Length: 323
Image (cartoon, rainbow, N blue to C red; front, side, top):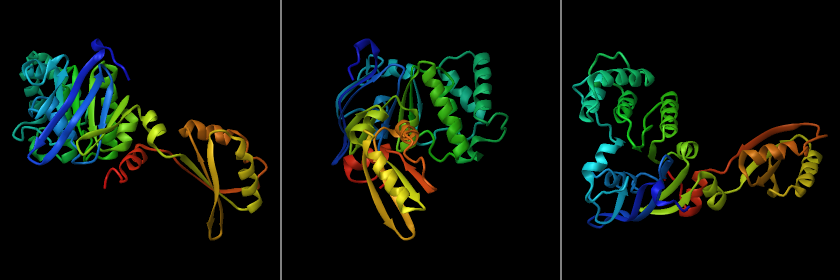
């Protein structure tokens, strides 16, 4: 995708970081658009955290450069740190401070007036479900500490927000809460860079995704583009009580253009048809609306499997993301 110069929030050119023989980041080049939610998806050890540490000026690259809001990470550190928020993978809080004191301390570092800082801190902690806690933050659970860390990164309105595995260790309810906040950041025209190995997270939240493996970008695009280009077909598995019903459905679907293949699966006491098709849930609905299961006595079971970013990674690398 071509992005005009004035639309670019982050421009990365052949960025490298080597630790002796380990090429943690090995020639990454990316353009990230202002206001978009951009995910860098990859397994643990792929180079995500090293990349974000260079972009936030914590690490100096071995070679290459990147511009964050027009400032080089080599020469513009002071300007960059004023405009970015960071929620690191490793929880970073002040153990001997309470929740509100942690957040207000970050606000003070950014020059926020005390009254405004207190009000914004109260609202953030209420939203994250940790307001009113008077014990030291070192006594918080891991999930609460991660939510506090995220609140600390959001107390001022950064132009670019870096999130490195922001939902690691969270229960499903807290995870959804964080997802809602991430989406809200995008709605406020904040550029969000999300580092994750969670396929569902990347698929649900991202405008675009770059897949990184062994320090290199191996694919980039919207989640839909990646799944269509590198993924597998969607599948619908239908089990019938009668063989003649299976035969009728198999015959009827031959004329549907987005159906790739249909095959009978031989299982004990089951008459099952596996239908492979393109286009995700939208085409599944169309498939079911075609009327190809009309006049059938009874369908015993239906199971749908949608093409995912896990399939993309598997097809590109030959292994699963969590291997």
